[in-house]
Length: 331
Ligand code: SF4
Ligand code: MG
Image (cartoon, rainbow, N blue to C red; front, side, top):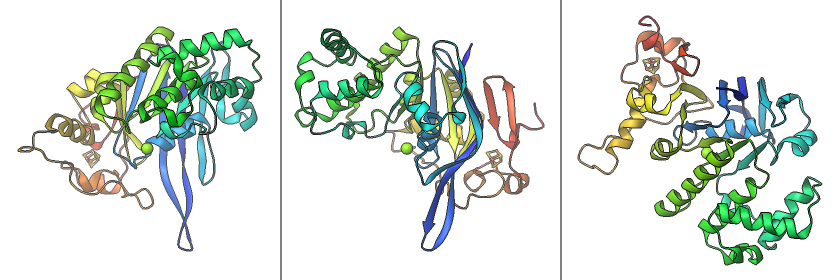
């Protein structure tokens, strides 16, 4: 498969004050991954593991206190240009990348619409922002099409956000992000604030759009059932690291990392209270992460080396790796 996005050794986080002390929240720790053409790459992990920060860094939305300390991001645009994203200025990213090549569906997207503007004017603004001229008829046609893609009736065009339900507003925001058929869409928990039925509807609509357009989706979610439904490949994040990545069927069938196993167990046991056992221990501390393997305080298989030395990344093939000492001598 062709890679359209490559992330090499990306590292960063938040410089914040705790009282008078400046601390670094190390949310993304030396992350490398690739995104193929025409695929869904899921990013899974508990809240606070760095998923959203990774998404923002890839999108280029680096707003203090977020800082990128090192690493490179390359994309191949739809006209086959290879660009190093972190070499572009924020103005160039705005003009050339956002909405056109990469779109971002933020968390709590139902709240990002301007409450004072009708839906059609919110769409018109995106055209203006990119200095794209379009006549009124074409614009209305395209707008109706995009709303239809997200299963919304044409009346929505003239509505104000407060006249729509949360699920409808969320679909409007998603339609907006797909306006120019971007090659890459990054969706951060696109359906967490809605009920389960609406969630399934929205996910199927995104899925349908993506398959038709052969675009690629980076899907951030803490919910493993969402990943099982949507992903081609899945990356598991823990304390700023990607600890395992692979084809979604392989990872669900034979999870390698103990943390991946725990996540999948919690999915299978969900709802069955008699045998439900959550993951023991505290979620990761990104200010003072544990030494060695960051998962060691919660890992049932932890060995002496795990407590002192960071595990290496073991590649099983180009698209499957695991970061765990258990696999060092056996493969
Ligand atoms: Fe557990 Fe050690 Fe593997 Fe970390 S490296 S997940 S502590 S076995
Ligand atoms: Mg998040």
